[in-house]
Image (cartoon, rainbow, N blue to C red; front, top):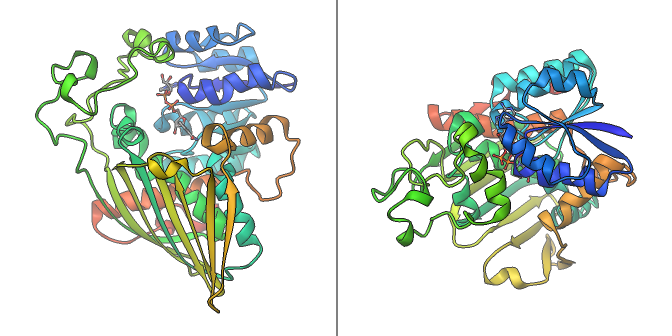
Length: 409
Ligand SMILES: NC(=O)c1ccc[n+]([C@@H]2O[C@H](COP(=O)([O-])OP(=O)(O)OC[C@H]3O[C@@H](n4cnc5c(N)ncnc54)[C@H](O)[C@@H]3O)[C@@H](O)[C@H]2O)c1
């Protein structure tokens, strides 16, 4: 029976890991401690689980008393590296949520600590397990596209999902690295993994056009805002019992308001971003992310020496009703093929459940190489970190400037 501690008892920590371990994987795994700076939130999570899992705010005490085999990191992004490094130093393995961390110095520190301690970091890139992404990887592995020359990738967050990043800690660069790190780490990892190439250079642009101080009719938070009745971004879930238990009832402890105004002047991340990446092995990528789309989804094309793949996923909006995904393959002789794939059920199209099974049970072979480590974690955040620097300094930024290449072999 493997012993786990959870560090960061928020939404993801609870629903993805604590719930899975205590309710669905308890024959192979056991949660022995939950740590959060907000004791009330950690206690709430423990109270929702079987097993009376002890709650801590003191990291050293938890590690001493619980003697875990592995720590799961699901805190606010900026604190991932601190916990990763000190946990590795104790000889304990890590499962960390994405992004592995959110700046280059911390990325270097994590890679050094892993090398020094010989322990193992797993980065949970659940998007690799999404059915459409897994299928693209299988098709690419068949060689039908040939050598990949170009990727065009567009990700659309709708105004429900997208706005939520502007209500909480994500909205400050220092906490999340902005969406180009916090969110796009998924997208960059998908591309790096699909095409099997390493990013070399990034040039980016970013803007804040919809959220941030774009309106004068705003307030600190929605539940006390005089304009909430007329605002299409008013927080809709204040009365959800789970949200109340996890956030509203705990806010006196640390001032974490779940419903901060999306038009707050303290917002310093972008909501509209586009960039280009040159890969070491020669591929070029153009990528864009918006956080204010009328519908949620993504669209990708991958062109190579033999053909071109096109895939699209609609998560909301009229076209989301289609029960299948359709991948199109075009070859150079005018031929086309369509791969139809039934959509999966559950979080991230069932991807989260497949990832959990591999993490905790390990009873399915990893034939596609879906389990990711620190190198993958680094390569994907480094594109976002380079993009942020590129936007700030109006210049192309190389990955080698951020982390020496010998650390990423
Ligand atoms: N893979 C995915 O699809 C996915 C989805 C959602 C979130 N996430 C990741 O999970 C992590 C948590 O996100 P969330 O949505 O649960 O956020 P959240 O705000 O609900 O939870 C974050 C928790 O971290 C705690 N915390 C903050 N600083 C801390 C510190 N120094 N020490 C210990 N705990 C601290 C907060 O009190 C809070 O309970 C993030 O890194 C996020 O990127 C991943």
